[in-house]
Length: 428
Image (cartoon, rainbow, N blue to C red; front, side, top):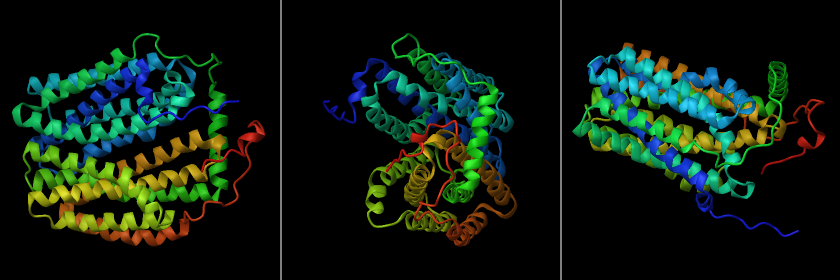
């Protein structure tokens, strides 16, 4: 049997259906990032409260805690393409409503936060369904290319979007950016029309009993596996403290430094650039010299130092370097924690426990953002950042209880209804 040729990183773009979806996702992701910049800018004009500003990150993260598992269940139970169209129509309606309220002069902190929460619900449903759709669009040998292009799309959106939002805010108003976001979601709806993707073989939808049994098996597996418990604990601990970045950096930028729109967009573009460098360049280099636990430790210490630097910032240009370093350190630690999770989780439980990791992390981000925002309101942003950095370093002592080196602790066997060969699959 002839070995299939490896595809290039961009070969999936030759697939017309995938290329349409990729371009639409790139445009929509860029508009979303611009929208987030505009929402932060608008919020500071309605409220000087550090707590209210920090809530924007919590409202975006909270829906992932509540809806990730139901969305994964729906992704396996119904036709994914119409479901994704419904999700993106919902998000377009929410973004369009924010634009309409803005043009009518009816925006307020409450409407901006409710809008962020409503968009977050759409993102929580969209993520697992979109991931499940891609194998229906491209053949198996093109999946590595599709995964690479998906990561590239998110990185490009994270860099270009905030910069675009800053430029638009300098020449127009936030409702215009909100309207652009609505158009981006409608572009995805248009790209999903038609029957240009391969359909998965028909199968009976899972029942509620199947869902309960599936989740119960994953729960018992996690409880009995020391490696999985270590991964969950480390992800929770990291998310609680890293939530200070999205919660408090906008407060520093908007309330303390009084950045102009272009500089605000450039700030978050620098964070996206640092994230790309951390994921594509620094991560591969660092893994040659550091173990998993050591690398996450070093990245966490670097983040704690960045909190100290953020607390001492007095001049605008230096905040761009801080944002880039924060993005790089965040991605370094998060990438290594993700790899540790894939090694720790048995193949038969990977989908459900990856969803559990996402839910736990996003829940911790939401709660952490509220805590740090409340502390900044009561004690000041800079004092809160100093406290967050100190507590972050202190928490690393707890991390030694949940070592990620090595992740070869004995795990419980798969349930009887799982094929026996599923336990033997290993991902290096």
